[in-house]
Every structure is written in C-alpha cells, then in structure tokens.
Image (cartoon, rainbow over all chains, first blue to last red; front, side, top):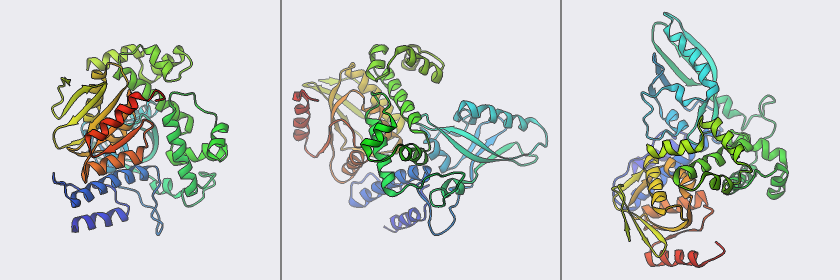
Length: 293
Length: 129
C-alpha cells in the first residue's frame, strides 16, 4: 500500500513517467494497481496535448534530456517522455535511426545538422522545430534544443520551451492563442473528435454544420481543435480516414475499390493519389508487401 | 468449430456465425500482440462482419497503444462485441475500454457466457444493425 500511496503522490506532482508493476494475483490491491496504470497512461497522453499545467508555479519541462543520438544518427538513449511521445511500438527505439521518426520535411533539416558530426571540433547548440511522426501517423511539431559538446560525437536533444508550449493554456499570448478553452469547450471538442472517429466513412462535414450540431461556432471548433489536439481538424480527419482505410486494405481481401467507396472516398483516383503520396506505392502493392511480411 | 491459429495465447472458435476469441494465458497485451490478434481474426473471418465474443477473463493487462489499436483498426468487421470479464482485473480493463472509447458498435460486458451469447445472437437477428 505504501508503494501505491507514493505512486499517487508522484502522479499528483505531474510525474507520469512511471508505471506500477503488479503480480498475477487477482485481488483488490492488484486491481487498484491496474486502475492506476490505466490512469497514468491516459494522463500521460493528455499531458502531451498540454492539458496538464501545475498551477502553483511556472510549468516545467517534462524532462531534460530526451534523446542522445550517436555519430551514426542512431538513438543511444531515450527517456520515458520520448517513448511516450512516439508511443513506441515495442520500446525498441535504441539503435533506431532518429531520422526515421521524423516527418519528411524535418528529415532534411536533421540531415544538415547531422552532417556537422563529421566535422572535427564542430559544436551544435541550436533550437530547432522538428516534426515527430506519432503512432497515429500524425506529425507533431516539437521545439527541441540540440547540443553537441565539443570533442564528443553525440547530439543531446532536449525539449525546449515546453514551458512555452504549456503556458498558452493559462496565460493568453497574443502571438500564440486567440481563444482560451473553457472546460465545456474541451468536452465539446472531445465529442467532436469522437464524432469524426465514428464517421470516417463519410465526407468531412463542414465546420458550419458541425457548429450547428455541437452548439458552438466555427471558429471555436477550428481553433479549439488545433489547440487541444495539436492538429488541424480536417487534417486529423483525413489522416485518420486514410489510416482506417489502409487497415482495411491490409486486414481484408476485399477489392480495393470496394474498400475505397465503403470508406466514403468520392473517387478511386483521388484515393490512389493520396495513398501514393503517403506511402510511395499504390495500395495493391502495399497490401502484397504487408501480407508477405 | 475450433479454428486453427499460430498464436499460442489465444483460441478462436466459430459457432452459429459468432466468433469466440478466448485468451488462454495470463498475458499483458502489447500493440504488437494486438495487431497479431486482429490480423488473425481478419484472416479467419474471411471478410465477413461477425459478432465477437471476447473471453478476456485471463487477460492481465492491455497497454495504451494496444487499447487504442483495438478501438480503432481493431474494430473493423465487428458487428457487435461481448466482453466476458470477471472482477476485479478483467472487469476494470473492460469497463475502462467501454467508458473511454465508447465504441460505435454495440458493446457490452458480461460475467456469464450464456448472457453474452444471447446478446450477440440478438444482434444477428436485428436487421437494423
């Protein structure tokens, strides 16, 4: 029980980096541990959306060093924040090429930075925005500090200005925030998100119609969604739609045209272009490759 | 009818157009395992949309990535879902899943297999679903 109390106190301080271990027993104490782990995972994800701010002091970065990259561009170290941010499939980030975790746009920037590793005595001390691709194939832009100490062939990556990312929740910033989201707005936006998830086989509903259904205005939906989920609402919908369509292509042997129309795409050509842009190959070939694996 | 699978911790059976998935060992389900299970289910269903009875009584834990996957890609081709769960652990996991994800397909938690079966049979008979 002491362990559980200490754990809850850590959660209360905003530390979501740990998970309780629990035995194979099925008693009430174990069930409390399970429930706390569920809570931690959900809080962790919420905190990444900047939903958590300690109100009694300046928000602090979740962590200092997130990644350490070696001279070959591979990850030598990653902390719990980095693992959570990517929701890494099987915690096998060590040894992974860091570039493979980035969006295409950011990969070029990263390669330029990495090239400095080959220059003797070069140092890197810069702040850069990199797009991290999450497990939902969404690109989240993060502001990182990159530091290469002189004489060492590593790059230390830490989260820069996470305080800034978080403060827009409670401190209006004319550069950053046009609206402040009230608790009822957040609830409404969660319902909007659920509505989108439940209607991926439809066309994207107009913001005007959405606003009517959810009893708000278009601006609050559009801006609020972006602030809360860190992604524009239409981008979220189309990325999710593509992801579910891709899953259906992989999981079934239905003709691709059937799947495409079932998922509400208006034209096969439009879908093929979208798919090709994302994966670099047509859906039929993708299906064959995936099933072969 | 028992269906053959290579996954060691799960069994699949089909009866009266209902697919029964049973977890046989105390396992914590990760995303990789979730994908494995869903792919196997899809393979056995042969593109049919079926009601599913998931016997989750032996599941130890399901991590966030796996839960998210089950709720999204993992819910394709499911007509209705009955989760067999007993207190305390499996029941907490099942309730969390239901209350957090609020799945669009009819989903309920049961302690008795007979009641779960009856629920799923109803969905087969319901022409509106």
